[in-house]
Length: 200
Image (cartoon, rainbow, N blue to C red; front, side, top):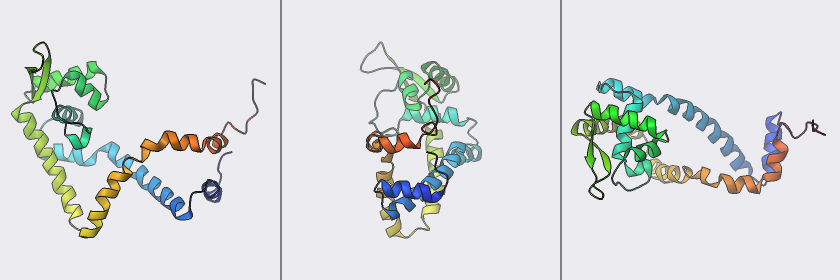
């Protein structure tokens, strides 16, 4: 059953027991997230920071430096010894690609290989002084730009926004449960649902 009009979509959500104010919020949030996603994929702020700071690396290389540093707010874990496998996991890339990118950063002097304190047979990766300076500079650049934007907000708006954004950031954790809850509605939404079974 393809939804051909906004009224049909509204009716579907109403039938599912989703309140009118929530329905409106869902539609607004989805629109904003689509815009945000398109801008985030371009990574405008990160690109601009690398250009303005003249550090001579691209975003993929910068991501490797950040993955080596591994800040807890970004990766949600405490810092420990970093190996090539850690970089691959944090960036969700193939280990061989991670190995090439790490080697490039080592050759350029932004990172260095060291021996693990926990296991002398294991090679770990650390940021060099130059690599750390780049990560710190880019982060400071982003904080200046974002700080300027947020400085125009009322303190109470900011105090409400940050905890709510942290809470909202976890919305996708509930996809499986919600999909199971609305399994019948989702099945009916499929464009294939109204088509005759060709195999019959």
